[in-house]
Structures are given as structure tokens and as C-alpha cells.
Length: 439
Image 1 (tube, one colour):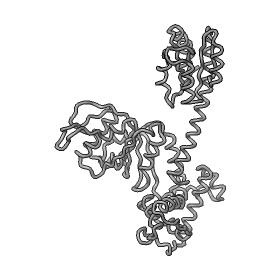
Image 2 (cartoon, rainbow, N blue to C red):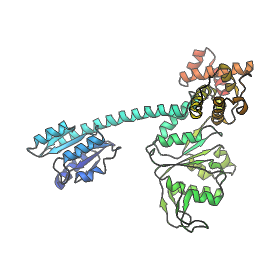
Image 3 (cartoon, rainbow, N blue to C red):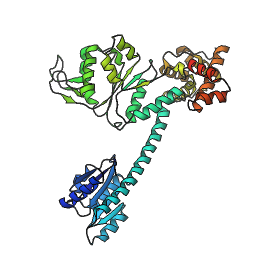
Image 4 (cartoon, rainbow, N blue to C red):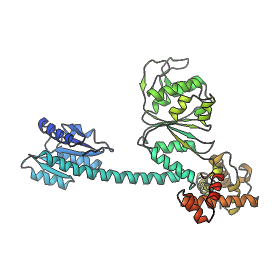
């Protein structure tokens, strides 16, 4: 039986341990062996993907002690108890305490493999259900953090869920204010490294020597004013996520150093020759298309391809206007709570004006407009005048886009089905989907 799960075998008798090991290895079952409960404990982390097979009588802590430890940490982790002849009473107690099964010495290796296989199958099913539940929870969390029912945002959320746990480096492309750092934060929080450090650095507006020290750190005396060792952002992010915003503004000299980090996964602090291993996911964000920049010689092509393992493209707000009502409503709620002000009514007139704005500042600008609306100074600082109604052409185009986007989303991106429901020609619908940035 080939399986990605592992058996943790706890047996102090070297001959019995070797026999059990060989039997499981011949059956294609990965096995890790230790001689005591204390040695086993360090492998029983919350994410341990496997089962435990343990002898009842061990030096130090007993198999029963180990069973209680496992039950406290993960009640769904199967534990198979091995007992000696005459230990039936202990075996019954172990079953009452939650053991998956027990085997009485002497036993055949075929019987051992059979019990282990059944326990592994149960464990695999439990882990599969847990993974599905976690994915559903993550999807719900994503929908509250990356608001929008437009096809573009649905695709962004699907991509984040697909790659969050993969640990690959990611390049996020989008205009100013489209939510690039929020995507980076979601990638970190939904990954296995979510409890580790998330370190953000804006690469714009920094002198070379300052950026060098920020990224790589320095030793005492490395330059004037360096009185003590400083850990850089890359080293501090090891085990977690390093977010590099406005990476397009990184000087060429720094690009070369960053490329080496991505290739070798080591750094050298300023003033040191010692190589320090680092292991962090790098998420870079740019408001410029780095592929075009690399072709024009403005950005290193080799660094672009290193960063661009996975590319997440965030659409500007003007290309997903159907998301504006939900976004604005959420921002109003946040602002009312933050400023301790009453929640203002979102009238159809205000919503109409919101829907026809170009929003060059994208989500950030929309959020600022919501803050001003709550503070009662919307006309002064947001440029939105609720008394000015959109033109007939703007209103009709806006309604058509919303209608098409809603049905296209309902039909899960199927053009033909959407055309059938809207009773329009497929070619006409295709042209409108492209016009409104829905394809």
C-alpha cells in the first residue's frame, strides 16, 4: 500500500522494532521508529499526518501515557497498542481510553500490516474532511476580506486558495489602490506559515545603502552609525512571508542581490562574510507590468522570471463596477464604527454616482469616499456630489454591465448559457463581455 501518511512506531525492543519496520516497509508504508514515549513526543506536532503504533510497556512513560498525550493533542489520531501476553486488562483500558485497536504478542506481520492499513485509511479520510472544512473556512474568510462577486475577483480568490499553501513566490500586478497588500496578507494568513512572521517593505523612495541594510541587515561597525548587529527583513521573514511592495522601483544593484537570494536562499549581512540560510516566501507587488519593463531594460528579466512563478492580476475598480455597492457598504460600516458616527443611508442617487465614477485611486479612493460620507463631508473631499445624476447613457451602460456580470457569474463563466438566459446572440454577448472587461 503506497501512502503519503506515516506510521510512528514506538518500541523499545530492537528486534521487535526491526521486524515491524521491515514488514511495513515491504508493504510500502513509510515508518519512523523510536524507542520511547519521550522520543515520540517531539514528532507529535499538531500537523502530524499519520498514526501511532506503540508498545504498552516502555522505559520511562508507558504506552498508556503516550495514548493520553495523543488524545489530548488530536483525538482523531489512531493509536494502535501492542500488549504482551496476559495484558488483556491493559488492552481493554486502552480501548476505553480511545485506542484504535490493540495487538497481543506474539502477532504475525500480516496482521500488523492489515491493522495499520485500516488505521491509515481512517486517518486519510479524517484529514481529507479537515482539509475540506479548512478550505471552506478559508473561502468564507477570503470573501469577507476580498469583497466582490465579479468574475475577476472570484478568479483571484480561487487562485489564492490554490497557491496559499504551496509556498511558491508570487508576483501581484495591479494599479495603485487595487488591494495588492491585502492579497499578500491573505496568501500569508491562509498558508501553513500563517503563524510565522509577515514582513512588509516598500522598495520605493529608499537610498541604496538604506534599502541594502533593511533587506539584508548589518553587523556592528559595518558602516558609520552601525553600533550593533541588525537583522534584516529577509532574515526576519524566514519561515514566513516577505512582501516587497513597489518592487519595480528597486535599484538594479539590489535586484542582483535579491536574485541571488531567490536562487540560493542565503543572505550575507552587511559587514559579514558568513552566509545565513533563509526560507521565506517572497510576494512582490508592482503597479507596472514587469514583463514589459524587462523587455525595455528597466527591470532585470532574470529577476522578473524568478518572481513571476505565479502571477496574480488585480483588476481596477472601473472594470468591476458591480462590486462597488458591496465594497462601499462594507467601508461605510467600518467607518461608522471607527469614527463612532451613525451609519448613513446609501440612497439610490449616491449609488448611481458611485457607479459611474472612474475611481483612478481604485479601492483606496472608494474607501476614502466612504469615510468622508460617514463624516458628513463627502462632497468636500470625495468629489462625489449626490445631487448630480448620471446621464442617460451612463445609467443605461451601467445597468447593462451589472445585468451581464450578474448572469455571467451565475452561469459560472459559460458564455453560451449566459447568452441563452439573456436572450441575445452569443457573438453580441462576447463583444459586450470584452467591452466591460468581464473576459
